[in-house]
View 1 (spheres, rainbow, N blue to C red):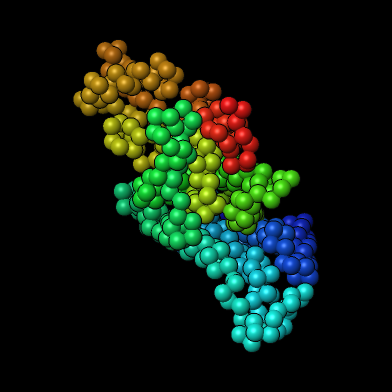
View 2: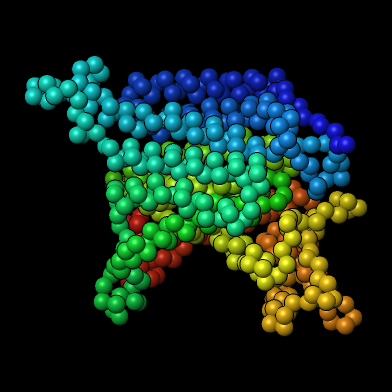
Length: 471
């Protein structure tokens, strides 16, 4: 039987570092109340506390998860006789949810002070008739609070789905559409608070359509619902090697935070400032818990993230993009995930046999990862149309194929972007493969932002950043 090996103790250096970081963050958090709440500073401080809590709890609770049966072996290692705890992304998701719940008073601190009659109304002058009414609840930003609470509800729902999947290994066809139900609170708040379902038409189409805006109506809500299904599942299928789920999520979150910063550091107040601040309030704690998880999940992994983290990370991106009103920008940051989904469709929809797991094959002799393959029996060859398509993909360098002397297909590489990268680059170490894929994610994401804020001006009159086209 494989031995169970997992250290639960933090080293002295780790203990001092995490304790020091937590104390500094608590001190910063307390100082924010001396001003007007300063929610962005508070969010940053809470992110540091979330990092410390996640890091320590991942280490402490690992053996508990193993004892509960949430364990597995890393098959891409030579010495894989010991168990590794799974579903550790659930810890990060729970710490994150508690963090953003604790954060609720900070973005509304000034409103609470103003809306509270009596104690704490600093520098606020009110007429007698207002003071007699007790609380100025009609001035409180209820719509902003509703948006925040709907985000929490959606993230809690998707976390339950992820934990259920890790516990019961739910089949794809049963869990595929569940994220759409988790998005219902978001869509309801979007409908009540914002309700914009129009899209801006490219300049070359406007003369033919006769208008600049085209209203999609409820089709727009269908688009957002489909997007909420795609994003969590796209992170889940772009997985299979140490660190890749978390690293790609961190890159996407950092790019979203960078995009938010573009709207904050402007020479004049931007109308989208509040929306992008809302996005940062949710992204900073996410980065805190994700970095803590990455340290343990990077090669060689000491924990597995599980499906919980994949669904949770994908829904965080959906929440900030829908409530922040930049869902189309997020699409440009998910180019690798979109390609991976389209590329995987032949196997996902049964046109090509799909094994239970499509992880890269580990060559124990060389210690390198190679493309995993699907075997074809001689009496179960693909239909002629599919065979031609497979050979076309081989000619385009998008697939690896092995045939026998009679021209019958013996095996094809599995249809995932990870296997495709190994087809292009050849066998390599797992950590190098994860690093190259993460760099690819970052480069394509930066290109997506360049398209969004610069190349888009070739077909649109104006960018949301208030940059006007030269035409």
